[in-house]
Image (cartoon, rainbow, N blue to C red; front, top):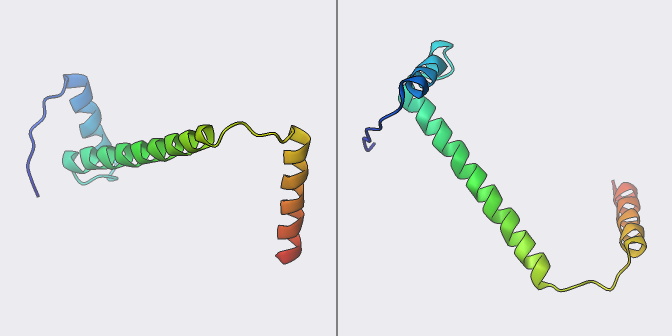
Length: 84
């Protein structure tokens, strides 16, 4: 595993160290690794949502009304209930 040294303000250092006191993390490195993992997952989710938004915008403007969309959604729900 690679080593990286970082500088933190005293308040952040204390917060990281406090996270290890309840036993959830073995050490400060575990806290930082978990924070990075969470940020990576968050960034992936944001990128996925942005891709969906881009796909939707690229598909153009629908000619269906809200009532058409609602009717179709309710029909899908009814079909799932019959199948399940």
